[in-house]
Image (cartoon, rainbow, N blue to C red):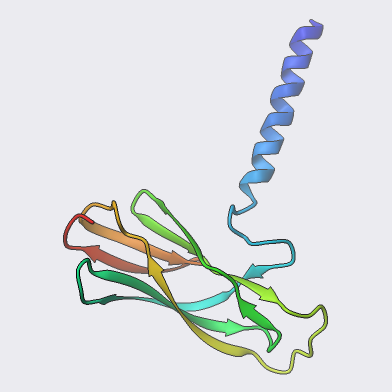
Length: 134
C-alpha cells in the first residue's frame, strides 16, 4: 500500500508541475519583461524569389523607457505564433505618455506547405495564404 501512495503522490506532483508550466509561455522573455500591447497585425509580402512575408504589428508601449525586445516565433499546426516582448530600461520611469510602435517581423515560412495560415502576434491575429510550398 505504501508503494501505491508514493505513485499517487508522484503523479499528483507531476500533474501540478505540468499545469503550472503550461501557464508559462516559452517565450515570455527574460525576468522583468512583458509582452508588447499589440492592437493590430497586418501581413505583407515583398517581391523576389523566394517571396518574403512580414507581420507588421502595431500597438503602444507603456512609456518612453520601454522598448521592444527580440521577436520569437514558432509554428503550431496552421498558426504562426509570434511573441513580441518588451524590455524596460529603467526600474522607475515617469509614465507620462504611451509610445506608439509599428514593428516589421520577418515570418519564417520555409518548409510550410501551400495553404491558409493564421499569424498571431501576442494574441492578435491576421491571415496569410501561401500560394505555393515554401
